[in-house]
Length: 107
Length: 119
Image (cartoon, rainbow over all chains, first blue to last red):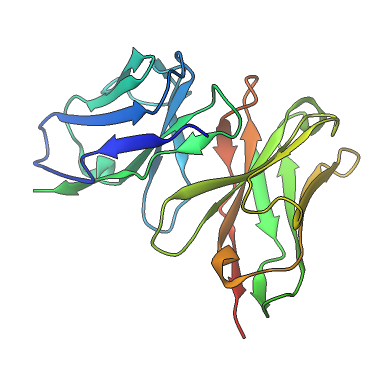
């Protein structure tokens, strides 16, 4: 199965700053990559699919890029509601696999 | 709007069985594949199983293959996960998720139901 590796595990950012999260696949997944946001006690929420397409209702400050094995989620100006855990997931090959997550915390 | 409501979680002894349900509304259930994804306490997300829109194909994680069975009743807009031979490591919150038009990712998720396997 494809192993997804996210870095860093924890990212400390001040409100208003930019956050850059990385996700690496153990083999090419083309652009079949999704990003999710999860807040404590809540279900994951889809942010990005197809590596760069925002899901319905997702603010423009969230953007995704990359293809093949290297992907990035950028939050251009962090708002208070953006502090959460973010997961990437590949769906190019079965089984779909998730990264271990990046926790974005308040600096 | 899309709603997914899981039920059936609880405490079960090792070796026991449990059946989870996911009631769907707000979309044409019979047109979309569905996933089960779990999350152990304090851990990340783990995909568990997937069923195509018509039930024709099912996929399982190796960790549950042979023990768990995914199924659906399109007349009742309900997804199921039959879990047998449960182990302590199956303890997790179980989420159902509606698959997108591309089957592999979930675009809407339920709030989850907690399964605890303990003696």
